[in-house]
Image (cartoon, rainbow, N blue to C red; front, side, top):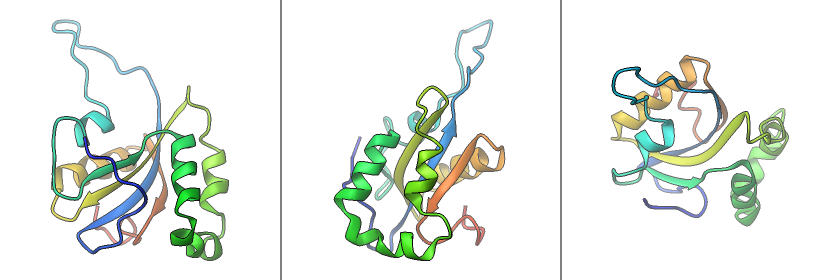
Length: 138
């Protein structure tokens, strides 16, 4: 798995922060399998150009943001509620999995998984670098 430090600045991918609701995923009574979680489906065992996981806990996301804060000055100034304020709501690791990651523009699998997760209400979009979700890219 590739791990990136900070958001992508080129035009081949877009950066996101999401909070995923943690819940018990039922297993098949016959084979014992369950659906893969978002992290497994998008990042483990597959490599797609610029699709990369940056941080996979609320604490790690906050640290990554603070380590590269000059990139995010516009976030705090332009948003009605800062990303830091939003992340405060999702610090309970028993209820939420917070992730910061980049999705390659050509990675339709990761885009579809992310779109379905957000549309189902099982995740909250905390930050969308280029407002891709609002504009229908996901």
